[in-house]
Image (cartoon, rainbow, N blue to C red; front, top):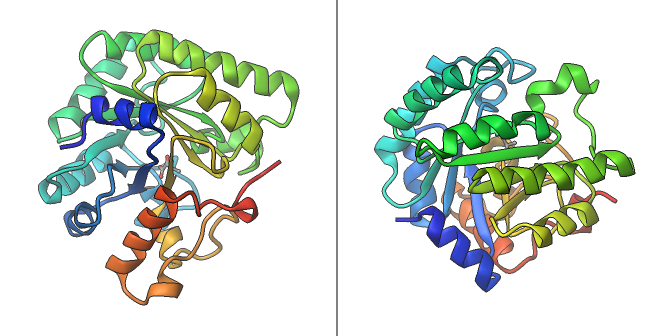
Length: 262
Ligand code: KIV
């Protein structure tokens, strides 16, 4: 069974960590079979499963349902479940109660989007036995405030604040960080400056691990982001495509320059 301790040791040894989004029991088994260490029950399910144009309509009930389904198929991986939009923007106590429901559904960790403004939540949850993954950079729940899905942290002040936020989340007790859609050198700097594992998506090859959205890496989501890669096209089998992704991440062959930002 993969735990936060396993992931820490992998970072220390420089062994790449693999993570994929997963929304059901069947795919949890496929991913277990090829050794994906972390399954993310991502609120991207609002787009990939429900067909919305953003993650905003996803509710806590949806996240609980999919977390339960993934947990039934999972035997080995660490399960991270997203706190959906609106489930943690209020009081720390309501964020805690909503996180408890995800943990009771089978999650081993919850993920929340946001920088310095969310550090208080990370501290509150971590102190109450809820491991937290902090999601920085492009935070899809803020797509309306950000003005679209675009690279974050090219501006020096924004980059400096992201580094500060990563360190603050670590100090507050976060167990993991996801960096989405940021320049590769910024991701490299953040990865080097914290002791907790850092997982990138559109953040270059120098993070401690990588995550992709399942439907993007299978090439079945229309108009996938440029930082993704269609692993099914080369393998012709879903199981082999997931294995090819794991192998490519473990050997630092994915992501390439083509999937990274400057
Ligand atoms: O919901 C999701 O799939 C995510 C990934 C993009 C990291 O948060």
